[in-house]
Length: 109
Image (cartoon, rainbow, N blue to C red):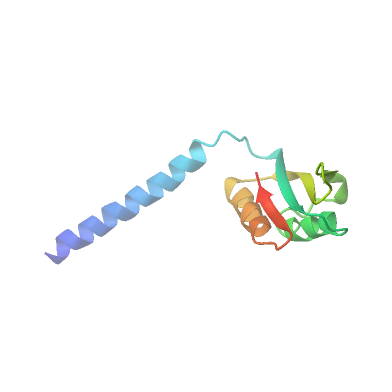
């Protein structure tokens, strides 16, 4: 009985690893590449600097020149396009996670 449980656990682990590898292989993004991330946030004078601080731990080459800012039509929000130096899907996932956790950020696409 214990052998069956162990065999099932090993097969489950193999399927999980295969699934993770398949996701990396099926990515439509070629790495490395310059990858634009759209961010919408609360209007704040330090919004671009905050984005830089959040993303730089994941992309050390990022500068303010890689961030373009636009005001919303009513001026309550700011839209930003941050063009990062994408090295992997895991790096992009970490950037998205960091951005969505920031209090000034409302939406990340």
